[in-house]
Amino acid sequence: MRLTTLISAISAGAITCAAISVPIYIQPVTVPETAPALLAEIAYDAPEDPLAIPAAVQPEVASYEPPELPEEARLVRIGVYNSKAKHWESSTTVLSVDNFSKGYSPHFVLNLDANGKDILGVSCRGVRVDAGYTRDFGPQAALTVAGPGKQPDLNKPVVLSPEGKKVVPEEKTFLQKYWWVFAIGMFLMMSGGGDQK
Ligand SMILES: *[C@@H]1O[C@H](CO)[C@@H](O)[C@H](O)[C@H]1NC(C)=O
Image 1 (spheres, rainbow, N blue to C red):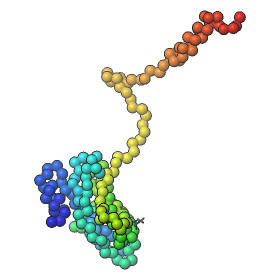
Image 2 (cartoon, rainbow, N blue to C red):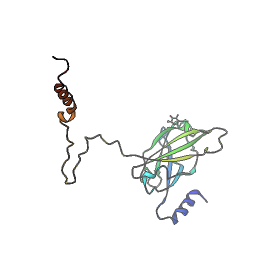
Image 3 (tube, protein in one colour):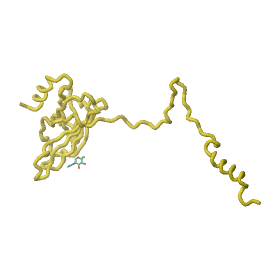
Image 4 (cartoon, rainbow, N blue to C red):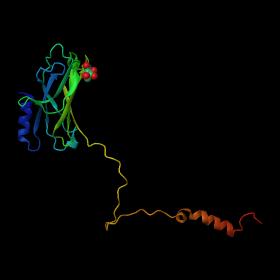
């Protein structure tokens, strides 16, 4: 049984999460007449809460086919491709064909939008497979979620009192802050002002 079928079968019983299978296609950039070809399928359960990504959602590379590219291809682009409508459904990422050479294993990263729904893009890097590495040598996948952009630093928040009035923190008066200086001065004056006589 293929992994995707297995995942669909499992999640058919679950109400909250649906299995998503993302087709990743590859196309040489420098040889544009070559049609995009299926490179990999990445499957994961639809996240209920996008904030739970990446910890709670573990994508699997359900299938991977090392690409067969024209000899002259140097750069390729990858992305989510709709083979029926024949258009890219995510942005594409350009990388060098060397990432798919022998001795390298592709590591995919799916970048989801802040809602965890739409796939903004896919990136991939060939990671060198170390001889002697017995595990984690196959194609791998991870998810990231595009966080909300940095918020502008605005002025201090307006504090409202329970009646809805703006609360202005009271500025202490000079006297309130430095009463002790006057107290000492007063004490010195009353005790005769030191050696002034
Ligand atoms: C993968 O592609 C990137 C972008 O073209 C390149 O910088 C990098 O060297 C490539 N990695 C390998 C292992 O070829």
